[in-house]
Image (cartoon, rainbow over all chains, first blue to last red; front, side, top):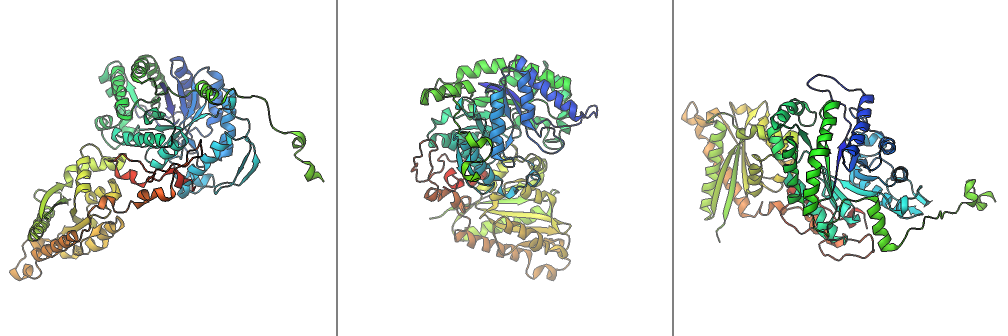
Length: 384
Length: 246
């Protein structure tokens, strides 16, 4: 089982001091979080993609490459990559590049984005959001698996004899998850391709999450990728911890009450009862997150949001450290112990390479593309 | 064969007792009497929305109904007909009433027989029912009882006998109840939850699933998930074959 953190790198005033971090501070904290996550034994760092204030994560591959150069083991992921407004050709190139440079430590979570206005900024129509997610991903899936692609669709110019470079590392594309909270079509999409499904349930009751995951699992089996119990599931999570649970409640309450996402809504008590948000001691967080597998089945990845609502840098780093040293070791031990042998572990490049080799034999690394006149951009028939 | 209809009454009055609740009770008993005359049976329940004012606000803000609100959602979903009554405030329904509509899944109302009632201080507010509230339920594709019942203070006791006698509140309540019962008798609202979800049930015809690895066609005739008991928002499920246009 893989554990990690994800961030959307929001700039939110600290409600207890009124202090607003600068963009530069926020970016530095993001890198610091990833480095600390690796040091305390977490498996995954995932970064959001937003193109509007108050967020600072417009360029995920730049950030992840920088983090990749400063870390050794941690998997770099996204939360989410906009499969709607990004050109699938550019996603194929950028993330294959990142995959090579980080030695295969890359996977992606596809999402449609939650800001309506982002669509026209990139020349897209939000009314076609779902259709774009379907078509764009189908192209991306091919670009990583077929060396030469002829393609025609509704949302970008056709491709003739196109090769996306670099080719995926070891001939194995980065693992893809599809993230959706409410759209059954996205669970269906994940199941169809045999990809992972990540339900970022941080604002949702488990009854809802259970239904989405169940749908995905059923359809995963339907499409012949394995048993429903073997489908690849990830969940979101949210916690605030102090050794003494009452201290956690007292310290976190002003952040909860003023957070852009839930301030003014349900009370912290109602919200913690109904969503995965857990405010208390590390033991309480362990106890809560041990129950998730009872609801959604044995799953492969648990991500936590730890740096939101204007929490200051020092607190965020303390939270990540507690997560890595006090919560995750217990969860890992318990959840790995309960997982049946035929249910896969969290996806890694090494495991994907091994699976591919078992199925198709060793990958031929030799460069196999015709160059010749392509160096000049002109072919014989064009010069004639 | 007699059957038992479940009538749910939702009332958005604020005081106890409220004239809105009085109208709600009157419409409920008129409906019960009309059903009894057909030989069928009826069970009723009434929900005071003001008891869920905070829960409704939370649901609007957090996008999901909390634990205290979930029984209300289930009651609406399971009802064969809903009697919905609100005070008129500022030429429209009470915000509490509108909150119920805005905070919950709009598919809840699709195909559901709804009898509307409203109260206000004077008859000058009566058209708010037909101009502000009925269009909302039309949008939600509810099955509307033609007569909506408006009650002003005079209806609960006019200054003179003649003022309340002509086309009295009781007469209007009974007419609305008769209309509701004939709708129920005609099967309107029966199976409302499944009324227009053919989008998912006919999917197998052109939505045969294709295995991406083998290219084989999966011949599951439905092409749709089989586990029952999912929330309404899952009903727009479309199989991948159709999403891809293959």
